[in-house]
Length: 414
Image (cartoon, rainbow, N blue to C red; front, side):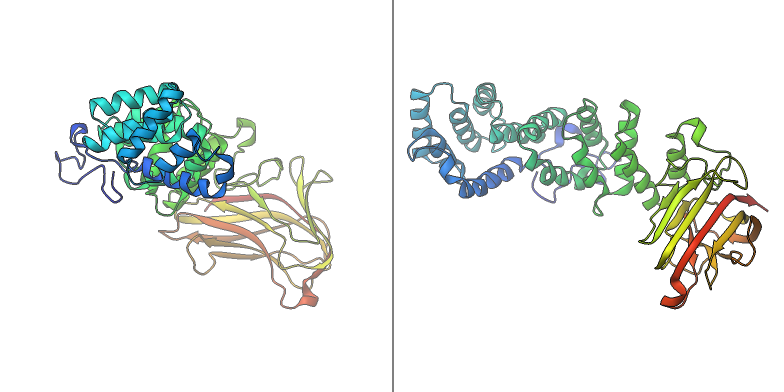
């Protein structure tokens, strides 16, 4: 399809989609032009490697570099076939000429027959696969088009990203999704290349989520696909759904019993990221699991400081609290020489004032101490971040030694 022409047209048939028979062009129907353009660039870079000046490799490459085969090019292609009757590329040159003489989309009977011969004799020929994809999409056969793209992506990995990104304008069409998912369900080697496309800012978030949901019903998602699905749900403001999806992917033994804060007892140090604890300690800070005299359970979290100036410990967790009133409680053992307090801060994902700032006890009294504070989540704040801050104001105050231990964290309704 020409760039910008949609597969779906509002107002057609009352559903916003064209009947399959009315499709005249699809967003990838310029596949052949893209492949030939890429080949032309490659030819300039590796011209010395394509054969003798009058050999078939150079002759076909020269023909491909033109907007359309000329009469002299057809004669050269036929000469190639006289000496190399199995050269599929020469059949492709003849097929391209026949297509341009016909409907321009490669759907004429002669063009189809020649392209079929070219594909059999040169199955790895990129322009042949691209032309077959164009013809299938122009005819409205999306599944056959994706089958040809699959073959093209296997032999030309460099084409995966630019061609997949041309899906974006039509990714919200159910037929495109069904055909793409059917091909992805075979687990092709280019499957992971679609993830950056789905995460692209220009891709419709609902369409990307729908595609991943369709794929998840067919086969298990790859880790990168599952992560992309969570990121897209977050982008859509559906943090509750994203967190639930993330929890369901964990073994039952790791999910915990607190529906609001994950692993407040720090019993699962191997589960991080997404809606688990995010550990990003700066130089001079070490965050470890500690089984020495925890306040609760078998482990606590120990944050150790070696004397360097630090902005913060690098500990946070993303939450998905529904609007309402809550209480955060935890046990703290502060054995640092900090002159200023540590504080748990809770903020909405959207910029704004913190919902909570709970200062922790200083190091004047050792051993576990219980602290708690109430807070409220307003409507519209569907996702939040809880992070541990250090309220120092100068470089001298930021220089820390000792350890800060945390345990028994919990967020409860009130």
